[in-house]
Image (cartoon, rainbow, N blue to C red; front, side, top):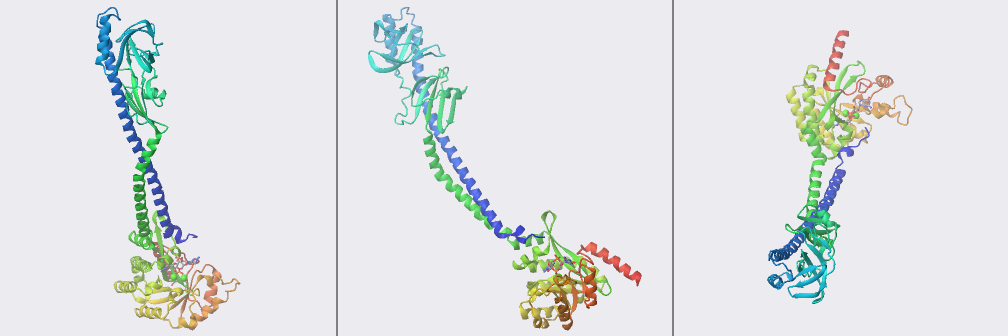
Length: 535
Ligand code: C2E
Ligand code: CA
Ligand code: CA
């Protein structure tokens, strides 16, 4: 109780749910698109960075190759005096053949004693060694020579033989891109040998034992390429702004794609939702899945106490065994135009459940509830005719209950009721007193029974404003020559009152609640036995 059809079946909320799911999907897709764009741009910037660092490494290795070739030649010359004429001639030859080495010389005690350009007395001071490389060379990172003032050279010496070069040569790449940092640092010491732009000593640690690596640190993309032969690593660092700019470009493509995909998904969700969750679709599915079943409540003869009839009441066993009561779906089925489908299903179920029982007991009648649409539905009427024809049961063992509210639309109802009665089927006006049909209107209808609604039964013995109404209803029924069935009888007092006032039949929990067909059969059989015993 207390649950409205809306709580399980509300179409609008289902569509809102679809919209919400769609919106969430769009948001997620956009986030994914941005993420993808970011990854894509990091990827492409990484490619650029590692191309540059690879280039720097190739240039540095070229210079180092020439340098070590020079050492090899000088050391293997067999000359005892490193500044002899022959040695100097060899130095000249080395520097002339090299595209990278500007000057070849000999250093002792931090002084350049001679070079490919001649001897120096006294020697030219070149300053202390900055570090010793793992290749066995002494490295001076910034040496100024009098023959080339204001120029800083890189000087490497091995056992005194020194190679002097312009440090910029390996890093002469991308010179028109001031935001790109390039350079070389020593692998073993982590010290920058030469570079342009910013250098971070922690890169050496992040490289570990790798020869190539791309790091993304605080938006910046750094590509590292370590030399296979020598003790240094080339680096190229591209700024985060570059990544951001690329991300924007990729996002311009990917976000609209995400948006379109998300929108398409939302629209299809809403469409599918509208279709799937629309009440007619829900009912159709429930019928197909055989989720409806019937319960049966006996109608009792108040004089004899015998069960003379049975009302078929539909139930809905929704998934997970949740039994839905009819007040939660009958009205919705009526409003969505699905009630006739449901009634036809009900007729089928009733036929399956009770035909043999009713056939065996001609004193028993079976009541079906029809809604207004059923009265206007050729399908429902012909389904009823078919039932009569196939069952071979006397038609007056069937009763159709039509709610007073269902009778409101005038003469058509009268005509159809006549049709039903012509079939031999009895007709009851259900829930009498709850609608607004005028008495004169009722007199125009061909009816057999009047069912007094529970709200009036509840007033019996209770002093309320409507207490007197039940007497009027009984009077009306008598004047129209209609038999009465009291609904929702729950107390002995109500039973005695109804009996005393000439009401012939009653239904209610004091006799029995609605039961499954098996329960009904068992109970009915037991009563028939008792009746025949006492007879
Ligand atoms: P109704 O035709 O007036 O049916 C009587 C309702 O009162 C049933 O509720 C029944 O279970 C309940 N009832 C019977 N005795 C007592 C009692 O002593 N105390 C109380 N408190 N209730 C009692 P149910 O089965 O929930 O049906 C509710 C309504 O749903 C029915 O009212 C009827 O209008 C509609 N309905 C049920 N089955 C069908 C059907 O197959 N087709 C159509 N069109 N409507 C149906
Ligand atoms: Ca009824
Ligand atoms: Ca009723």
